[in-house]
Image 1 (cartoon, rainbow, N blue to C red):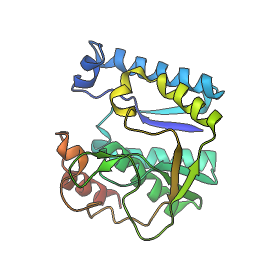
Image 2: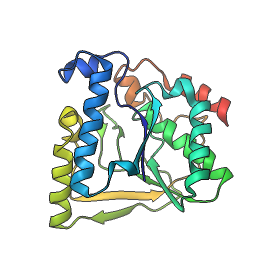
Image 3: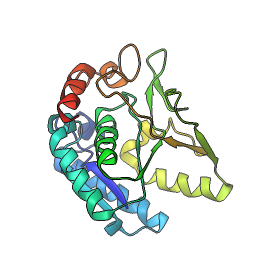
Image 4: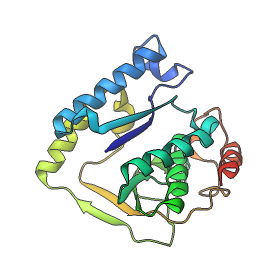
Length: 215
C-alpha cells in the first residue's frame, strides 16, 4: 500500500508554472497521472495508492490532523512494516511523515523503516548519496539487478515534471534502515536545513515548534 500525504502541488504555483501549468489543480492532476503511469509499469493497481488531501509544503500547518489521520489509517490497515523518509531537514513534508509515523509507532507496534531521499550536504547542495548518520541502526544497501535498474529507470521517466530532482538519484542501489528514535524538538543536523536554503516559507524552528505540540 502506497500513501501520498499531499497532492504534490504547492500553493505558490512556482513549481506548477515551471512545469508548464497555470493552476495548482492542473499540476496536481498531472503529478497524479505520472504516478499512475509508474504504477502501471510496476504492475501495482492505483487502488493500492492512497492519498491524503493535504497541500504540498503545507503539512506543518496541519500536523495534528496528519497525526490523527495517520494513526487511524494504521489502525485500519494493521501493517507489520511502514516505510517513510528520514527526519533530515530535506523537505518539511518528509519530516512530517517521519513524525506522524513515529507517533503512530509508539501507539501501535510495527516495524518502522526509512528509505533514503535527500538532505543538505556540507556545502549546502542536495545530498542523495546516503542518510545523515544516526549511530543507532545499520544502513542496509540493496544492489539492483540489471532488470531492476531498467524497471526503475522506466518508472522514473514517467515523472516528467520532476526530472530536475530525479536526475540526482541513482538506480544502482537502494538504502534502508530502521528508524532511529528521533528528538523532533531538535534539528536533524547543525546549520541551515536544505528547505531553508531553498527559501521555503517555513523555518526549521517553526516546524519543530509545531511538532512539539504533537508530541
